[in-house]
Length: 321
Length: 73
Image (cartoon, rainbow over all chains, first blue to last red; front, top):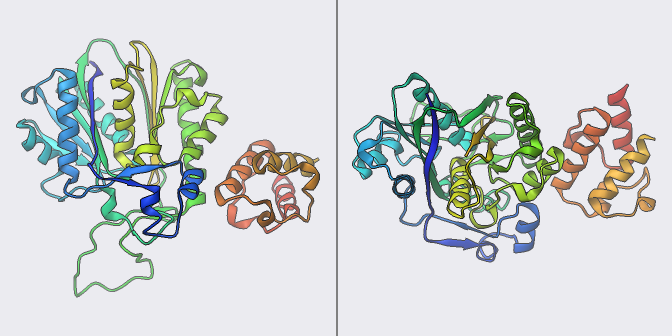
């Protein structure tokens, strides 16, 4: 049994934080952020939560698909910023929607949505589900050191979702997941707690996202190029035959370099980092939703999704739209 | 030959004229940011089939040429 995307949705917090706003908080400028990252503005949660953003994106995806919450057989949410470890973000979405199916979270940082999609694919392959809601949702702003100009300018909050439906022909043509291990390049902390018995370690870092920029850049370009070349070969097409690439929106220059190395023109990359920043697991589904709503994707188009990030993890999938 | 090609790659990314790039040219004098250095290294890796680390390429173009030739040996 195959599956296809029946509908997409996304949601972002109301508050927009521009580069000029940020330049009043840390020593930076619109020119510095634009040339090095490609972000002009991002949305930052004030009253919104990871779960509320996930639920709103899900409502829109359900409306787009014409599927009711009662018809969902599974909800999987990819997030590294769940409001609570329990209930999970997926569980909170289930309750908010009034659905009754199993729901759980998975974590693979910025690659999370692709890992969630592959998880859903396993349920479809077993024939145990007909409709699955897959979400990527983050309130990454709570993990940032807002005095560190090298990281706080990059990220934004948001959520994206897709409703998947079983079908006879296969639209999920190929996928790859990769975990390389290690915390030297990127580390995203969890709640540290305050146990009086804990012995401090020399490996302890402040409870904020840590990222080594140059190594992250190199890993990201390499991962994108390898996944797309390898997946294209597996389905017998040239990378240049891919109609659209939906990359993780981490840095515009990562996307530009991958475009050049792959020989896929930038016009084929769906890029929205300038408005949202890096929204971690939410970035791929938000970009996919924007393209879907803009009518840019046509039946039969080859759409490559590709993400990379903490873990180090990376993943790719090629869909036939 | 190695230097000529590296000079071309650096010129391509920095906008600097190849004639102004010598073995003594320091990276800091090229007016490029930290990501441009990685972009240059990745193109050099593709060209010469070597692996380079941004933190281990010295301070001048000559250091980089030596590193690439060492990697090819």
